[in-house]
Structure formats: structure tokens, C-alpha cells
Length: 490
Image (cartoon, rainbow, N blue to C red; front, side, top):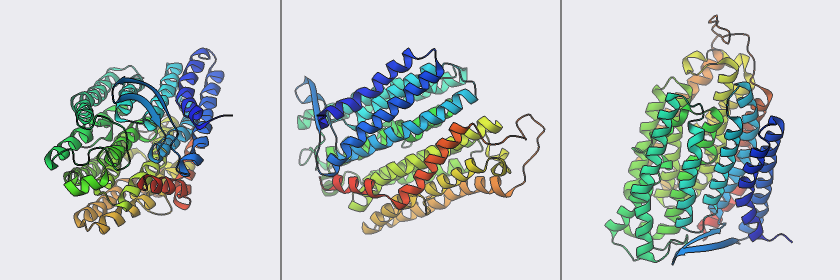
């Protein structure tokens, strides 16, 4: 009989084993990609098999070994980690399908290395999702940074290497200089770094020390892309589009905001932060990042750059929701992790499809492209609606909960930020939709300027699935909501 503990270990092991299978099949592309899809499907099965236990209140876990007293490598599946694992494992399947079309359609080099690093990145993401303590999370957080570096620099050009240096420098720098001292200090003060409902720091620190420790954590988690530690994200756009999707939707940035929420809920504890006011400053930082990144996105002509700054803005919705510390806002943080994942991966899939089929990278070049690529741009429109927060897309649900939380806390400045950012988001997405469908195509006389249709079928199929998922989460948000309630109930 397969136990929950065995499923936890399997979920951790399957992606790594899959990477070995991909390596062995590297000489045969069809077999290599079949191994990728089979591994992704098996991982999703393992994660889904754990869902009923977690929804019923169970917390299956595994303790491997203890490095020092109070610093074990251990895993425990709690509701927030369950959601992150569901997002990563389900989107890996779709991203793998998309990657087949993209990598072949663009004749990318080093495809075997790409698929191996992608599988190992998912393995690290599952390790983060199931971490039972901050020490284990830190280990897998660093591994994820190192594993994704070859993906960011995949093209091997000077521009790719420069982007990779910024990526690695900022993420390693923030984690070593800020996050590691926060971890060590927590261990020193509490004697443990275990993720515990209600937190582990009650009554242990002064108000100022508590706020300072939270700052070390939040800014030390560079993957959350809070300003001013956000530049790695647009710099990493030199990577192929499937990697951008990994960075923005599947694993990397979700690791950032997931870690922030988990630390607030399980290390500090919402009640402790409310009593001592340790998170008051964070709402201001997150609000500033939301608006400032939206303004940069509004001015960006390069499509992937616009999407990158949109991600910076949208991530801070999760941080803001967690910092508000109300039940509605904490539920919004959980919901937005899922909503942003499916919506943003759809947008990046569409951007990659446009590049593959039409070789266009700038918003100003997209006049009439919706007439030639109707499936792609319809999916893009759905993803854009989700980012704006309009029905019937998933982003409406999470933003509704966040707005409700801000109003319940009488945080009217935050309400104003949410309204302003909604208008700004519409301002940088809706002109793309307008250009695509309501302007005549421009015949620029180049080979790819006309006579193109949709991208390869695997790419169109993948973006159609994620667009449908964005709509489905609006109508059926039951699982994320149930997991949010489980998290808030301890």
C-alpha cells in the first residue's frame, strides 16, 4: 500500500529521476520529450494523491536527517505548500508541451540540457513547497537559483551572459547577505525554524527587532521581486520563452511570494505581527512596487519587458495581501498565487507564439496580428483580463478578496493603490488587444511580416489549455479557497 509519506518522497524524487531519464534519451528527441511529459504527469499524480489528505486536515511529512540541533532537512505538506506544488506540477505538463513546439520551431540548441535543467528546477520547487522548516526551504531556494542559471543563459550570447550575471548576482546576493542572517537569527532566538501555525516568535522580540527581522526575510527573498531587488527579473528575459514562463509563472517568482506568505503565517504569525505592528511598513513597500512597476510596464514597447514588469507588479499583490494580515487578504494571497500563475503563463506562451510565428517582439509591431493568430491573441486577452482583475478570469476572484481585506482593515490608501494599479494594468494590456484585433495588419515586406498563421500546434494547444484554466479558476475556485481556509485554520 502506498502511504502519504511515500507519496511525499516520490514527489521529491520523480523530477530528479526524470532528469536522468531525459539525459539517457538525449540522442532521440521524441523519446526525450516523451520522458519529460511522462515525468511531469507522474509528478502531478503524486501531488494530486496527497490533496485529499491535506484538505482533510492531514499534514503528511518526512524527516530525513538533522544537520544541527533544530536544523533538520524535513518535509511536511501543509495547505500553502500543497497549492504551490499543484501549480508547479500541473503547469510543468503544459509548459513541456509548449516547449516541444517552441524549441523545435525556433531550432534552439542544447535542448537536452534545457529539459534536464527544467526537470531539476521543478524538483527544487517541490522541495520548497514541501519544506517543513525555513532551513530546508533555504537549501532548496539556493538550489533553484543555481539550477535555473543555465536556463537563463541558454543562448550563450554576451547579452544572455550579462543577464545571467544580474540574475545570479541579485538572487545569491540577497539570500546570502539578508536571508541567511535572518534564518540564523531566527534559529538563535527560537531554537527552531519549523513552520508552525501561529508562528514561533511570539513574545521573543521587541517591535523594532521584529520589523527588522521581517525586512531581512522579505528583501532577502529576492525572488519576490520587491523593489529595489527586482532587476534580475527583466534581465532574465534574455532566456527562451518557456524559461520565462518557468521564471514568471511556474517556479521561480512563485517561490518568492510563496516563501514570503509562508514566513509571515508560520514563522512570525499573523497575530504577533498585528500586535507588534511589524508588517506596517511592508504594505507601503508593496504598494509602491505595484504602482511603480505598472508605470514602467506602461512605457515598455518590448512585449516580454512589459510582461516582466507586469510580473513585478502582480507579485507585490501577494506580498501586499500577506502584509495586510486580515483573513480575506491572506486568502487573497493564496488565490493570487494560483490566478497569477495560469494567467501569466498564458501571456508568456502567447508572446513566444508571436515570436515563433511572426518574429515580432515589440508591442508597436502587433497591428492586426489577432486576425492572423486568433487563438493566440484570444488566449492573450483572457490572460490580460486576469491580470487586470476582470471577470470571467481568475484574477478577479483574488483581487476581490484583496480589496475586501483592505476595506475590512479600513486601509483606504491600499484601496486607492489597488484601483490605480487596475487602471494602469488595463492601460498597458488593452492597447495590445486593440492593436491585435482592431487595427489593419501592416505589410512590412519582410519574410515574417505577412503570410504567417498560428505557431506550431503544441504551442497553440498549451496556451489554449492555460487560457481555459484561467477561466476555470474563476468559475471553480473551490480547491484554492479550501486550501486557504485550511491555512487560516491552522
